[in-house]
Image (cartoon, rainbow, N blue to C red; front, side, top):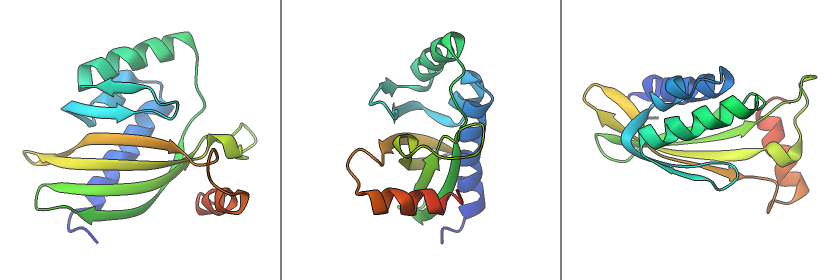
Length: 144
């Protein structure tokens, strides 16, 4: 377990909360200035400001479903870097998870002064290559 596990998990929770609130500013605030983000659809964003501008356009056009996530692990990669791996999904209004909307989130976080920021975020669709039982296991990890 990382010595700052709670703080690092809180950054991921805030990233998801920004998405769920359809707030590009809130979500981008979790990123390092030069962050690289690869979205679920393969869209790439470089830098906190580009990410915020891109997300503002997305949220202006439609209201995407909310994310739920479960952190699988947080591990140190030196004193000022950590890797967080989570399982995430986008539940329907009835709470069910569509298997095509399951993903594995992989984050590299760096300490920026006293705060942790996301330097790299990659959302890997789980169902496109995983066998059905693996997808079911991921959904189970989300408690759905």
